[in-house]
Structures are given as C-alpha cells and as structure tokens.
Length: 217
Length: 239
Image (cartoon, each protein chain N blue to C red):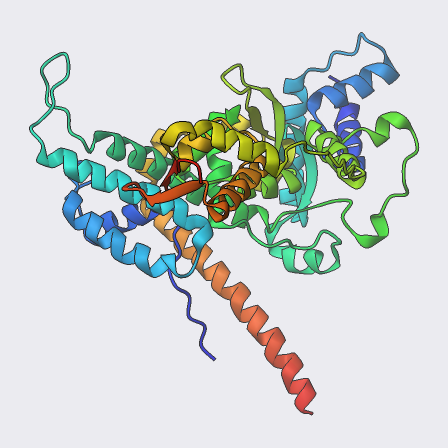
C-alpha cells in the first residue's frame, strides 16, 4: 500500500460523522483508483495506529477511536467539558441501574426474549425495554420459534458507540468479572466513578446556588 | 440542604442479594427462615409505597414460604439418590442475577469513560437539512420504528361505535305459565333450579317478577332454603 493512502484514510475518517467501517474505506479507494489497489483491513488498522501515534507525538487534542465496528475522530477526555458545552447532543443523563442491568443481560444473551430477561431479573421489564428501544440502544430482530413467538431483542451500533466498544466481542467476559471485582484496580476505578458522580452533583449545586444568589442581588 | 437517598432495589433478587451481602450470609447455605423475615419486613414497608412492583415481591415472598415449607418436610431425593436442596433453584437464580448485576457495573465504568469522549458532527451548526432521497430517509429505520408508526396510525382512527337495540321476547305472562307448570301438583323446587339454563339476564329478571306476581296471587309459596342465596318454591293447591 502506497504511503499516499495514509492521508486518504485520514480524510475519509475525518469526513464521516458516523464511525466508518474499514470495508467502506476500502470500497471508496477501489471505486476511485481501481480494483487492483492492494489495500486490506489490516493496512487500515495499521494506518490508524500510525496516525494516532503521530497525533500523540504532536500533543493533539483528538485521535481516532475504534468504535461501533468503525473508526471515528473523537476529542480527548480532558476537553469534554468545553466540547460538551457547545455540543447539541445534550449530555444525556446516565442510564439507571435497572437500564444497565437489562442492557447487560441483552448484550450477553442476545438475541433474547422478554420472558428470558424477566426470568433473570425477577421483575417486569416492559418499561425498561421501551426506554432502551427509544434510546436506540437495542432493537427488535425477529421472533423466537418458541410458543407465542416472542420478540427477540439485540443491541445496536448505538449501544457500541455509547459504551465505546469496537465489537460486541469486546465486552468483558463474565468469568473475568469475578476476578476484576477483587482487583485493586477495579476498586480504584469504582472510586473514580463515585468521585465523578460527586463532581456532577457539586457542579449542579454550584449552578443552582449561583442562580439563586443572582436573584438575591 | 441535605438530600437523603434511600437504597432502592431493582427487584426481589436484588433485595435478597443485599441481605446476603449485608449480613455476610453464605449464598449456598441461605438461612431461609431468617431471610424470609427480613424480606417481609421490607416488603410491608414497600407495599404502602409502590403497588406496581409489589407483585414481583409477592411472588418472591411466596417462593420463600414454599421453600421454607419444603425444608420442614422429609428430604426429597433425585434419581441418583442425592438429596435435593429446595433452595437450589433460588441459589441458581441469585447467582445468575449477580453475574449480570456485576456486568452492569462494568458497563457503568465504560459509560463514565465514554461520556467524556466527543465525536464530530454534534454542534448546532452541524445540523443537517432533511435528505430527500428515499434510501437515506430509510437509513436509520428499524422494525421497531415501523411497529411504532403502525400502532400510532391504528390508534388515531377510533372505530365508530355502533349501537344495536335488540328486542327481547319474554313476557311475565309466559313466565307465570312456566312457573305454574313447574310447580304443578304441589311440587317443590329451588329458585336456582328454576332459572337453570337461562342464558339472558333479562329472562331471569322477568322470571323473578313473575315469581313475585304469583306469590301475591297466592298461587305459590316460598320457603327459606338451607343453602345460602337460594330459596324453595312450591305450588299451592288451587290458590
């Protein structure tokens, strides 16, 4: 693969506002330059790594991430507050425990029916499924061949994007989890999440008190 | 100002896991009697708050009671002759649930990290104009969207209610003849026997009125029945 393709790949990823799959990049290149161009998914993977290395070396504020079966430019976490301020995608509220619980069951056991989900959770899950469907984190993919032909639920690309996963197989394995739970690293991360949540609450409180003190003046 | 947040549980399994963790119980050897008591205490508290989810808790409460009862009975054995622990199904359900609860915590970490990563194309200035080609229009449509649209279309068109009036051909006179026929020669029968096989409510009402009419005329007598909600009717000779 010629070196010129490094810039072409970069341009293609840059121009797409949805994660662009390697197959799409290859399709575009072959369409323009002919079928005989030797370019493989592996080439693209390597090029992306190379590009990211360059961005890091130059201390850039962004990089290419692998997410939802494709590649996308994303800003680095440290600038999220500023970028988020101008972003039209409202920094939507975090998912509830119940939603995460339902989602993780679907993610691991997909395709799965509602009765199967409810058997594991032990509670009615109608509302949770509707919410997740509305958020486009899950979708319906046909019906099961069992009695009553119940609907089958699967996760979407939006799900992968939401959790920053490249492929569904990138989900941590259930067996690993028990080890992770004992891990000191995990406890540290868990503490970090709690801190983040605290930060959010404090931020809100500050906003509220600011607006109320303005009223006082 | 202080905000107080009470622990909320996602369901009965979640609550049981909480007790197991809080009291450091062995999940493979759950003291059923103890945990049932704890569960019921919480349940009564919750019952007054939220009837919606209470149903799931009632199911768990009865499951616990059933296990408790089975523990008192002589031990059951399976084909291999091993003792069956009545708690086994519950333990398996708890372990399965725990697994996914842990996974959801894991996903929560990903969520936190991912919330801080921003993609291109999300600024207000980036709002796209409506694409008019058919294939782009249908790009992000899933079966669920179609079902939703269909449901909306169906619900928007309410059916015109059609009222039909049916004439019902049963008269008091007819029923008087019917009752007299049944109680001929001082025969006795109960009210329930009399109306047996009558499909329409109206027919029963008319029969009852005919019954009152006959009593007034002194042609039949009524007698209290030993059964609840019933009475006997007997013909009076030449009333």
